[in-house]
Amino acid sequence: MTNRMTTNSWAPSEELLKLYLEKLKAEGLPEHVGNSFAWYFEKLCANETGVIREDDIVPVEPSALRHCDDLSSFAGAGAAALGKACIAKLNGGLGTSMGLQQAKSLLNVKRGLSFLDIIAGQVEHFRRTSDVALPVLFMNSFSTDRDTLDALVEFEGNPGGIPLTFLQNKFPKVLAESGEPADWPANRQLTWNPPGHGEFYSALQHSGALRALLDAGIECMFISNADNLGATLSLEILGYMAENDVPFVMEVANRTPNDRKGGHLASTRDGRLTLRESAQCDPADVEQFQDITRHRFFNTNNLWINLKALNTALAESPDHGLELPMIRNEKRLDPNDPDSPAVFQLESAMG
Image 1 (cartoon, rainbow, N blue to C red):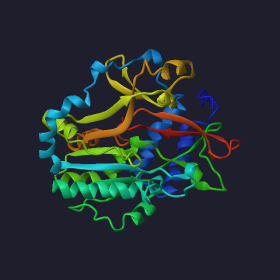
Image 2: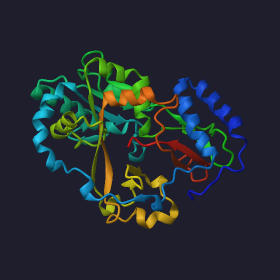
Image 3: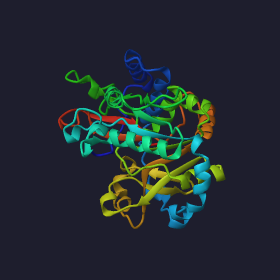
Image 4: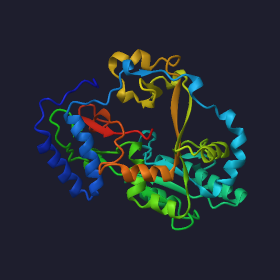
């Protein structure tokens, strides 16, 4: 798709927004989801694209980052902080591209074990060997929640009233031609999209999971994708955060030729680190975007968050949330039907 569609021919944004708020209410979604969608939709109606131009960023040099090998001295502090740590898994994706109409994490990986089986085994092993009841939370989508709970029925769960799962919300897809809510009578579930992983923070807060964690004395969360089995809790990073009162850490890695079409780390002109995803790349900047010698690092989506700092940021944020940068994804309403209408999916990223 072209990434160059505009909204100039749409009806006034106030009229369109009413249609979306009605759709969200009819679906039973909470008010804060409507507030968040409205904030991004107003940007869309103002012809904002979420594009990050090459002229507005500079590459990140290796000297600007801490190397994991330099953190070995913090392992002791990490071990001491284990009782205040938890892990979270992003588990909203379906395995449809692999022929599975269930959560992708239910795919068999080896010896009849799924991603979920292995994650549960990793957590149980960690609990036994560390003598710490490490909490684990899964952020599921409406499509994966039931499957996940069924698969984990024999898993011991979390201590202290901390939920095992919480739900990511969803946004309505926007018809690119008219700005109206998409409709698809053959399958109305296709008229909704996940709001991106950036919605994690709001979902954690409004589900009550964040408060439950804080009440249990949990202060640090390690987040990763459910299909990344190599993403295990690092005592070195945990200790580094605890010793230095660091609110947020992102694990990044060198891009390879296979990563050239994916997002990368960059620095804004005022020195702030940012992410640029493929949907945020201007067509004129594709060559630089895919240059792995220029933009060397990608986000592994292994993130570490100080929950007290997150709670403060959320408490101080407006009704629509943390105001993470908009990602305007242009898709077909039915991903398997190239003749279905063009839509915008409004999303945000965690980083």
